[in-house]
Length: 416
Image (cartoon, rainbow, N blue to C red; front, side, top):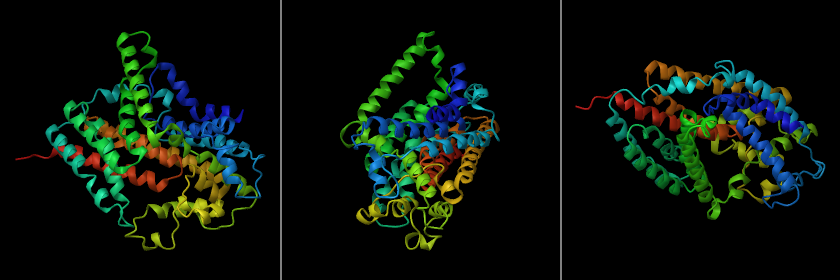
C-alpha cells in the first residue's frame, strides 16, 4: 500500500499530465519523481523476485548482516516508505514555487519549439563543437591517473555526450560526426554511463518536442516514429547487455533506497555514533582540492563514509568500497524526519528555478539553445543527485553546461 501511495504522490502530477498525450521530460515534476519511484520499485522487485541472483533478500542481507543489531529477515521498508511519501509532497511544493504544475505545462513544448536553435553564425557553432569533441578527451587520457585534482578531466570528456543533440537541427552531417566522437570518447572513459548519457539527451529532447502517445494510433507518421523509437530502444538495451554491460550490472548499483532504509533503521536504533554533519561533508566534497587542502587528508569522501559508518566490516575488508546514498540521505542523517522534508523541498526549488531560468532565457534570446545548456541537468545530474551524489552530479552537469554555453556563445563572434 505504501509503495502505491509513493507512486501516486511522487508521480501523480506527471501521470495526470498524460491526459493530453504530451510527455514533459524537462519539467521538475517528472525528473526527480521518476527516479524516486524507480529506486523504490527496483528495491521491491529485487527483494521479491531476486532476479539479480543476489541471494535471499538480496542486498539487504549482504549489508544488514554487517550490523548485528538489525534483523535481516525482519528488516522493513515501512518507515522509509512513509518518510519518502511525505517528502514527495514537500518536493512538489518546492517545484511549484517557480513553475506551474506539470499538468498545466503542456503548452511549453509549443512555445519553445517555435524558436530557432540559434541566431547568429551557425558555422562558428559547428566549428567549435567539432574542436571541443576532438580535444575534450585529451586531459582525461593523459592526466586521469596522476592522482588528486584531476576529477575535472572526466567531466570535460563527458561533455561530448551532450553536444550531438544540439547540432541535429543545425547540421545533420556534423550531428553524426559529433555522435561518433561521443561514442569513441565513451570507450575511452570505460563507463556504461558514458554510453547511456550519449543517447539520453537525444531521447529526452525528442520526446519533449515530438512525441505524443495519444496520436500514435491516429496518424501514420506518429506510429512510424513510435516504431522507430522502439527499435532504437531495443538496440540500446541489447547493446547494454553485451559483455560486462549486462542488465544486471546496469541496475545493480541502483540500491539508493536500500541504503536510505538502512540509515533510517540504524538511526532509530542509535547505531549512528558520528556527530559530524553529512550535509557539510557533501558540500566540502564539491570544493576543488586546490581550495580545500584537506580534501585528500582529513576529509572523507561521502561515498566512502557510508561504508565506514554503516558497514565498518566492509570498510575494513574492502578498502575500495564506495556506496550510493539517496536524495534524502544527508538531510535525514543530520536532522531526521524534518531534515528529509526540507531536503525534498530544496531539491524541488532547485530544479524548478533552473527550469524557469531556462524558459526565460529562451524568450530573452528568442532561440532554443538555452534548452541544450539545461539538458545536462535532467539527463545526467538528476540521477546522481537522486542517489545522493551531490558532488558528482553538480560538477559533471555544470562543466557540460558551461561547454554548451561556450559553443553557442561563439555564434555571436565575428570572424574576419
